View: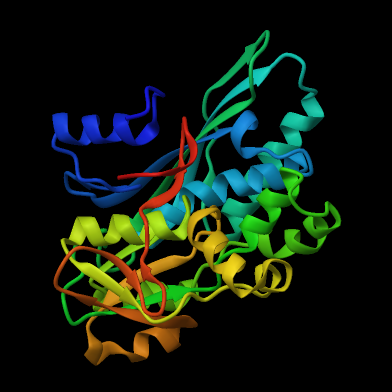
Length: 313
């Protein structure tokens, strides 16, 4: 086992020690005031802010990353709080642009930016702790709940981020970065109005932030089932640049932050996928693990903070 301190090791201990459900957002029952769906997500300039990204767009990405977890759980965004740790080397205009970008993304979804905490430090990285708050629009969803016989669907396509990451690492022509950016900047969400209307028909859901393979494994493990896929909806750019085989491997194991919704639902509600603009890609069966027809077993591999792209046992 690696001696490197990893996110998954910490999460496994916390959820076990305090009997917390593994999830990227939590539903909180309030006394007499209904429920809230809350997520906190860290945005760190050393990890999440590539050099080509403007401060305004970085702010938008920070909000999208947090609120995606609220929405996929069935929460309609209503507010956002942000704690900022700002290096003194940053200009006030950079900070303003980041916050304006975050506020614009929140406003588009009907959520209010309500401020937060601010610290200025002599050094270190810029960091934003984004707390997205939503209210249930219908059924609260979990990673667990997928049942044998359910269908599995994915919104949008996957893999464009792998082209972006490879171009940043110098593995691909840097000109490919610009052509892939517009697709990468937009979350691969389903039709959100329809999403809130159909959550009551869904069994389980999760969004794709750490890579598709890991996302699928998280859903399968939480539900205690096996996922059998017939296809992976790969975006056109990785297919064009990497070829079919390379695009499949990269889309499964070296992508992330695309925020596709992966969800399961009973077969009698097959119409749900079309209503959401999503694609049915497979089914839920008894067993464990994730399998792709014509490929075999999908490894539990993806982005693990502290290790990078890492294959878990």
